[in-house]
Every structure is written in structure tokens, then in C-alpha cells.
Image (cartoon, rainbow, N blue to C red; front, side, top):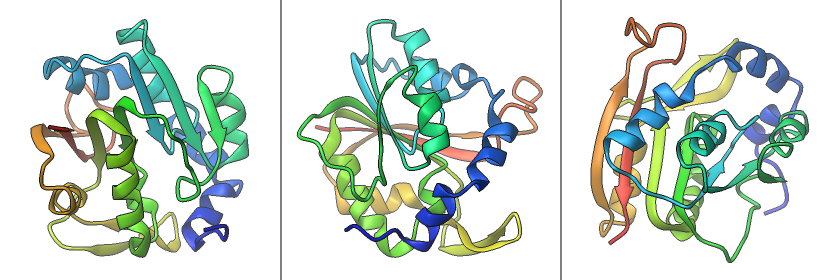
Length: 202
């Protein structure tokens, strides 16, 4: 697939610069890092789909100092920052291909911004790239809903992404799941409300 979806074109645009300004100070060790450490996840390689400027990968490098990190990012501005810190490619995740596999595959705040008709492609990619674990952190709703996103239509979708992934790949083992609450006094100003899930490949 070479043509960008409406949602990908949006994230490839200059809107991403404003997104980076809003989110650049978040401490991902306190969220994603905590989720991985508390569940005793041991890794030496990781890839993030939709890595933006690499905040999640930065956290991984601090926790797992020998970890090989790789990011896939569609926006050129974010990619220029990302590639200075991690191995990276400037691509749509729907166009990304590699024969490599990784101990951990991460996707965070990305599925919610994808064309729902393309989700199965992304689920297949998550499963294909993973040797051991899949980590996802997304807005949750038990049934699919579409919401306005900073005044934009068809740019934010909530649903049970983890359930859909698990239904597609039932051999995955659920390690754990939880909720990041933005009102948590230890996290306030650090993260938005989102549900996280860790799956293990058997």
C-alpha cells in the first residue's frame, strides 16, 4: 500500500509539531517503564510503531541499557529527532516491512489515530514483529466510537484494541493490563487516561 490514509496524511502534516510541544516533557519511565519492570519483562531489543520523537524508546534505553531500539515514524520532523537517538525509519507503519523480529513490540497512542479498516493489518504486523512481547497503551472503549480530535473529524477512535488483537491471535498469553489515570497525584501532568496491555508469545 503506497497511498496514505486520511489519518496518516494528518499525522504527516505540521500538526505533529504542536503534538510534540504538548507531550515532550512526559516521563515515560514512570508509566511504560513501570509497567514493564513490575511485570518482570526482560528484553534486549525493541521496536515502536509510531515512535514520534522516541520518548518511550528513551525510557527503554535507560531501563534496559543494552537494549537495541528501533522506531518507525511517519512524520519527518519527529523522525529527525528520533533518528538522533535510535535506529529509525521514516515510514508509514502500513508500509513498513522487515525480516527482523524484536523481543518487544510497542504501540502507544497510535491505534487510536488509525483508519479502523486498517487495524487488522497493524495487528498482523505487531504479531509478526514480536519474538516475545507486545505492549499496547491506548484509549479504551468497549465498543468502537469516533470522537473529534482538536476540532478534526475522523482522527480519533476508541475501541477495545487488545480484545481485537487477542481474538485475531488467541495463542497470545495475557501477561497483565492496567490503567494510567491522569489524575494520579504521582503522575499528574505526565500522561493521559489510557489502558495498557502486555501480551506474551507462547
